[in-house]
Structure formats: C-alpha cells, structure tokens
Picture 1 (cartoon, helix red, strand yellow):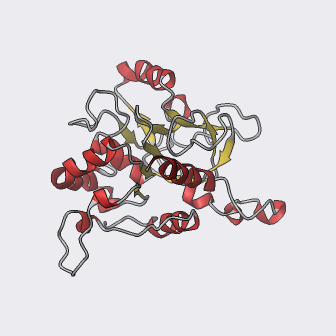
Picture 2 (tube, rainbow, N blue to C red):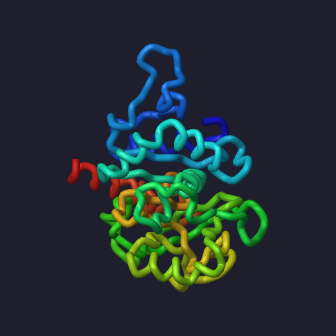
Length: 266
C-alpha cells in the first residue's frame, strides 16, 4: 500500500530464513486487481506480516487507513487466519495497523475488537526517533520468540514517530499488569550497558513499562515497534566493523522463531 517502505527488507529476511515468501499488495487481497492470477487469498498462506513505513501517509492516525480498508473488506478472512493459529506479525507501522485492527493488545473476548483498545501515540520526545535500541526478551509464549532464551538482550533498531503504547490513563496500571501477568509483553527496551529498564533515549518513545512488543493471548499475533528485519545480518550492527562478530544479527532469531513455529504446527 502507498507509503509502506520496508517490504523489501522484510521479504529478504523471510527468504533468508528458508521460506517461500512473496510481496502481496493490499489490492490483491481485496480482489481489486485486474491481472490474470494476481488475486491472493489469505487462507493460502501460513504467515502474514505487515511491514513498516507510513501506509496512506499515516493520515488520521498511524496505520488507521490501511486497517480500515482491510477491516471493511477482508475482516472475516483475517479473523479466520488468526483463529486458525497462524502467525500474524506487525513491525513498526505494522504494529500500528494491528492495534487499529483491534487485534492487539487483545483485552476483550473477541479475536478482533470492534474498536481499537489502545493507540500508538506520538513519542514523548515529540519527534521522529531513529536510533539503536536494545530489547530484553520477556516472554517465549509468542510465536515470534519461541526459540529465543528469555532474558536475552537483542539489538533491534527503532525508527518511528508514533510508538508510545497508550491506553486511557485510568486504565494504564491495570492493563500493563494484566499484560505482564499473562506473559504478553514480549520485548522491553533496556539500557544495553546495565541490562536494566531505563528511560530516554533507551526507551525512545516513552511507552509505559518500557513496552517494545506485545502479543495476543494465544501468542500468534505479535506487534513490535523496532525493526528486526534491520538487524537480520551481522553487518547491520552499528559496531560491526569494529567487532566483526559473525554473519548473522540478533533480528534473525525473531524470523527463525516464527518459521520454526509454523514448521512444527502446520
């Protein structure tokens, strides 16, 4: 969709992980293309990923227009995909789309809430934050972290303007505690030198409890503000030329986890 700009990096990550991945435009899913054989059905896929960027220019709210189009014309197909246990991931703008779709944070009984239950609001710094960030793995419940050791700290860079996880102030403590208790806070921002939860710039957006990534109750819908596709290769690390610590970067583990999840389950 217009404004999405991380799709090639995402595709390359999945191809390197051994999948038969392809780029699919929203119009192909909605049946609005005219080319022979161009239409795509979600049920034919095992993994669905919403990459980053600024879909539809992030007008209204980040991810809102993309989500509205998908929800209006393919809601039942998307809902069936999730309920089948197939993994759905959203990175950066993709996370924003999942929240707008009502798939995350998944606080109610419905698979897909009728209205968004949260928002990814403007960063507390009130500016675009593009910087190295380090994330602590908080849960292996998620399909995207199943093969990563809990407590490990990964380098996964951030680049976003609207990444602060936000619910009504009166509900924040309750919602955060529930997500913690249910093991659905998947990643938190940390200070790489101490491994401790820390404020700005280590938490670049000001999310409560240093939330960087979440999953739904079943663990198959996952949203993250930083970009694991941008740290798939070792050379992606800002210190690679000094450290020379191998071919693969930390982001690879996220893709290996979800591919492994699908290989075992489907």
